[in-house]
Every structure is written in structure tokens, then in C-alpha cells.
Image 1 (spheres, rainbow, N blue to C red):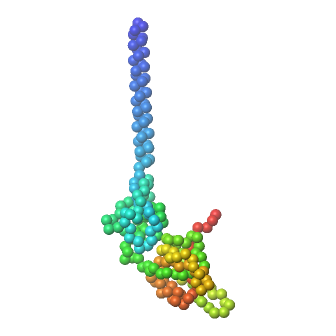
Image 2 (image 1 turned 120 degrees about the vertical axis):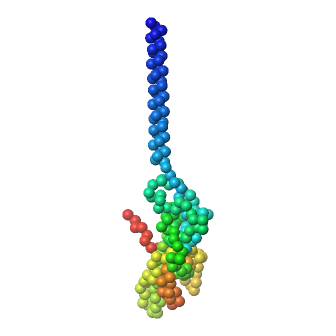
Length: 207
């Protein structure tokens, strides 16, 4: 009788052990499935350095970055055409490259112009910055001219040199991309010696 009881206890213990192992296995599979589903990702491209309108980019200009595989990921560049692509708006260094930022170079109507301004540029102004170009018509006498925006939304390509002193004035040279339909007005202002200013556009306001 004792032997029968011992055998029954052993079988019950084995059954509990098997059930416990099965529960652990099922739990592990469930956790793995949930984690795997939540961690689905795809690779999209980010800009290695700031990309400017008109730049033809290749894989060397980009860095693959893993992002969550959802509808948002479809907005970014996941595969680069064999012949590269052309940027039609500024993409900052480290920014994911939106497919909307790429296009046909024939649609770009921008001209590169070098502008020299008095004084220093704002700290926010550097390659890729969107700026407004202001001009004040040169006048004689004590009257202070009123500046006007002559080129809104220009894009800074580069700062050509550090600040220098010209004719007793501190000046800074900057290369900008301007729409072709604004080029004549800008060149006229430069030829007339109008006072030029470069002002960062759409700066966020502090809260």
C-alpha cells in the first residue's frame, strides 16, 4: 500500500513539473511574440551633413537609421536611386530625409549670390539656415532709410570668410541661394550700395 501511495505521489509531482515547464514555455513564447511585434523596424536614410537645395546626393551623404515600421516611416527615404537624388529643400545634419525633400533639378529656380553685410551675423545663421535679405536704400544726409525685405526665404550656402574691416567698417560675406525671380532686385541693391542685412527667418519664440 505504501508503495502505491509513493508511486501516486511521484506521478503527481511529475505532472506538476510538466505543467510548470509548459506554462513557463508558453509565457516565454508570448513575451517574445509581443516584443518582436513591438520592435519591428525599418532602415531609412538620415543626412550625414546639411543638404542644401540643388545638392545631388549619393549614399556617401547619408546614414542608415532604424525607425519604427509604421505609416510615418513611409515618409522618409528608404532606398536611394542608382543615379542619386537631388535635394529641393534644406535637410539638416542628422535629420531623416523626407521623400518630399527630393525632386527634379529642373524644378529648381535658384541662383547663388554673394552678399556682404555690415556687422556680424546672428548666431543662428549658418549653412542651411533660411534667412530674409533686407535692404536699405543708400541716402545722403542724416535721414535713416527704412529697410525692406527684398528676398524672403533665401538659403545660406556658406559663410565665405570671417568678419573683416573694409573702409573702416566691419563686414561679413555670405553666399545665399535666392529665387531667380528675386535675383535682379538683389543685384540692383548690391550695385547701388544699399545697406544689406541678413536676418534668420521663422525663429521659434521662447515660451
